[in-house]
Image (cartoon, rainbow, N blue to C red; front, top):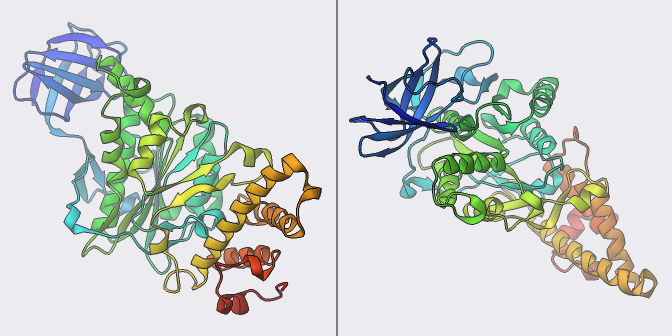
Length: 454
């Protein structure tokens, strides 16, 4: 352990120490104040004999002349164990209640997965939410983000997914990590999870808005380290929910500004894409390993702008997106997921006879096609009036209303199996004549479309 009393400068959450030797990137630092109080930090950058350290707590009270900095000679590591399941932790991975018995100590930055060792994501994760399970299916090993807007119920949806998600006949664990949320929002998560009795298959990491900004950068890596341990060493299928990635990116921008780095788009650091990829790409499946790691990150689009750097770059890295729409919220639809711009690129790897039901693909395709036609007819009706539409056109309008009211809309405590979801879709498709359902094979219509109108 190397000890220095040579702090040159304190800038926001950063301190600069000079005269250092043999110090490594990401090395953990202990900072001792004159009072004896100790804080933690991490080496962010090294230039000749100077080290830039990000302080995990805050820099208030640090004295340039009297503060002692000790370099630990190791990276930030997390104590992990199966004993973590069923417990709450802070952003540093410290248990908020009873302590755990650690099995291993792992670097929170993880280890890169050899691309040749990756196995293609497949198999169905049932969330119990129709708009996801039927139309934008979540597959084990996938990363599927929610693009939301400020004020929409994305946290409610995240809680519902955490409570309801299932992987058939397998050991399944949900890891929840919050970033920059208020006390009320975190209390909502805790109350809902405890009320549902789901904590025994969950691990929760909480970072509050009042916590130091640096902790916001650490918490997703801490959560993913615990998830990797359970998935790749213990054989669990792990679903990781990260909310809100916009708060994470804003913390990254704040640290970048303190370092006086050259900025990229909208003031974010030019390495934002690489940094987000270092988080998202930790999901997947590995050949020869029983477990899998699936990510369900949530981000709020600043000013509802999908071209903003955070959703824009996230869309490049991830395999699809679920779009939450204000207009659906105004109609009283929960969850307010707009089906048309939403997409799960790996959906076909998790549906069909082996995983869900044989008619799933065709029902999904037909529902998309009919709903797309409905949206066009709504625009036309607003111009020429509904009375000028044909009888079939008016059936399409009825179909769209029923799809939003009965299929997309569901209660916050309502869990639907994939079979129940597909039956609701068949009932709504029965509004339209057979001549309009060109994507459905007659075999499926006869088998599942009972009581249909010809």
